[in-house]
Length: 267
Ligand code: 13P
Image (tube, rainbow, N blue to C red; front, side, top):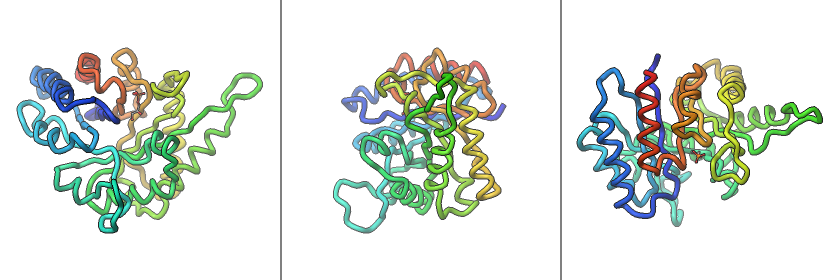
């Protein structure tokens, strides 16, 4: 099995740096108990205000060489004045290696269009970081018989085409893709977790669009949406996924360590 990847998207949590340090301490202790064979990839994406401090902590103890630094957003432009934005070159200087783009909370709650996501994706690549590109439908439509109808598939296809528009095959292969159906994200009202089989179908659609357009595929696909220690195993064992993108459970230090334990045990 290839090395699994766990990405912790802290969103706008925790409330204080002290709590962030506690999460990292717990992860550090757990990582210290692993043998070489049990290790996996781990990326922390803290809010901007903690980026520098988290970056320093990730260079210490067992986190060093076992965990990397990510960010949750990037400015579309490196030079133009844009109040409130954080540029790619700033992130690079803090040691950020990965940036989440196209997260559904930004697409739906902050009205970020495919065009903006595409510009942010290009900004990440231009600054030689790795984009973690989120793709996902807001709803699954159902037929009168209760079977999922096909509208969501077209939605995913169009979102993938628009998100990756204008990228070279080489650039697409540098991306990590995260399939995150909005209806399965823990904070969506009435959220229900997806199943690995149905999520794998979506991954198949994404792969199909990218391979048709670029004749190439990105190497890493993640699933995100209500991942906990109770369901991480089933997603990680499905061979369509190379890892998981964890939101709420990644800021609960006990629960997050349980997720890490799940990964190390199935390797
Ligand atoms: P939850 O794990 O809280 O459902 O969030 C998923 C997500 O949005 C990660 O980016």
